[in-house]
Image (cartoon, rainbow, N blue to C red; front, side, top):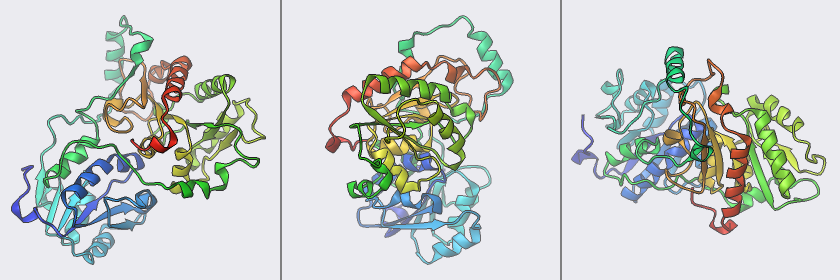
Length: 394
């Protein structure tokens, strides 16, 4: 295995990038795509992506072509579709066996991706894992109980519960490392997706029936597709929102997918702020991907769990206050690691991150993040928010 590009792939004319399958991961690949475009400015670069994510890549300057595949479409169909592109080189970003088989079936002569069991045969260059890479392994119940017992007397201050992501372990470096195998610059740039102002203005729900009543729009994202271990209690979302409304003139947009509709409805019921005049609008289950981006774009700040919309908001230039429990801000925090525009909050729970879908004990990681801590973080972001024309750096 090697991380150095062989001479046969130093000057490809056509490049296929096999994209990732999840929204947050897709956003985190944008620095690698931008560096790839920087390295090969004249190459035709196409992205293979699940159909559900195709709209994310609209107007992306790093790409010349988007090739999508439907949910349930088999590898032979995808491989046949790719053959028409006659690509010189494929860069495989996911670690799955399927993604390597797809480009092999397409007959692409150079196929680069991370070395993993059962898939190296389908690659022409298997890249060794980064030394700094951290695997997100689920902790067992026994490990969690051991960590809690060992840490029973340790305490940390409330001030130490907000911190900035470390720059050496973040997931965007995994994708940059693959691009660097082709000679691209491995230094990070901010994740960025493209969205134009006229797309926002064209959406009916972006302005309540009688016009916006407040300049400050606060987004609330109480769901998390991965599971309840990533969700800050909805009652805490409501308490923070109600206190914000008490302190300032603001409106709320509630985000979520179809599966989050019950959660969004529960949050709406817990918000006694005036709803009839458009101060609270729930978008859960009614937005496609571009509509989601439009809603996130007009927010002054997004209070969110660790989810795909968190990454999209940061990539659009919207500051986020992100709540981490079962996952790690060092690995999957929003934006470029170290960007202080965002506030990353976690408690001092010794068992966090456990990377489990559901908490097997008392959910101390999320319960340990107080409403007051989140409120202070949102207010701090609002106090430092730059002018609209400067809100572009994720």
